[in-house]
Amino acid sequence: MSYVAALNDRLVGLLGPFGPLIAVGMLGVVLILISLPAMLARRKDPLDRLRERETKAATVEDKASRLRRADGNDKLEKYSNFLEPQDAQEYSAVRLKLLRAGYQSKNAVRVFHFAQFALGLGLLVLGVLYTVYKSTMTDAEMSTTSMAMQVLGPGLVGYMLPKYWVTRRVQSRTEAITNAFPDSLDMMLVCVEAGQSLDQSIVRVAKEFRSGFPDLADEFEMVSFELKAGKDKVQVLRDFSERCGVTDIASFVTVLVQSQQFGTSIADALRVYAFEMRDKRVMRAEEKANTLPTKMTLATMLLTVPPLLLILIGPSVFNIATVLGGGMAGVQDGSTDGQQ
Image (cartoon, rainbow, N blue to C red):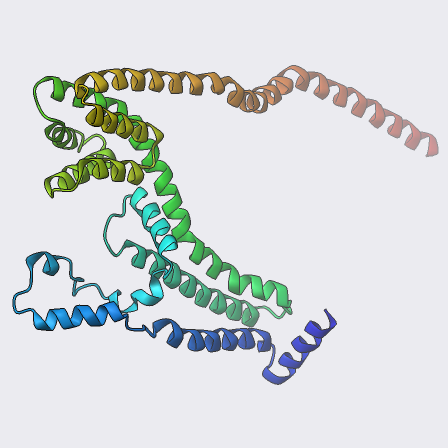
């Protein structure tokens, strides 16, 4: 602590009262300038060289490859090495979390990390400006700890805000999908028993649920698009389960995959599973109803007992205070007359 205090006094003596703040800002700028070239320097992958050679040698470009090229309007593409995690597992984890939050664009990871960087840096600058303004307007000396908290606190909040937002979106979307899934199974069962195939029933459910349950409709629509594109049905269903992150949908996918492998009737499997999902929804409602009295106990005590005590004991307390106050006033008056 003595070393820190000595360094603080030296910075104040050299740079004035804002010496520690200026030193922290300069250190941050230097660290950013040192790290940016290393992060932006993108090593060329040998596979990219091979792809370039194949592209130059090819006279006719395939339509599928044209569709998979990066969009020219994406201005964050050139900073992808800095804004996207280089580890494949970390990138997959962030991508899956954003998919579960409903952000399905290909540059969602890039935009998410850019939002963290921009908000963190912007609120850090606002914290610096607020600290300078506060120090200028007040004559009181500010400690190093409070100065660091006022400068770094907004930056930390700005950096964590996108992560908090995505986490809340995942929770709300998962709850909405869980609540809507039993109804979608009932409608899918009706479509299958009416003679439609499983693919057609998924398209129908996605269309009918668009207005009431858009999150589940988006997922079913994605499944229908992948099936129309020719992707393997088992893999499409497993991707659907992974994107939603709901246990009921994972069990539903397992039922469909096993029904397809063993050749059993999909309508029978849907009928049994839809019945189980309806029972499960009723049990969830009963569970919430059973926990309601426990949750209301504290609120009932806080909102009912104090007014009741005030009504019952309030008049008695007022009368006691009046009697005792009058008696004490009479004793004081008598003592005053005796002294006179």
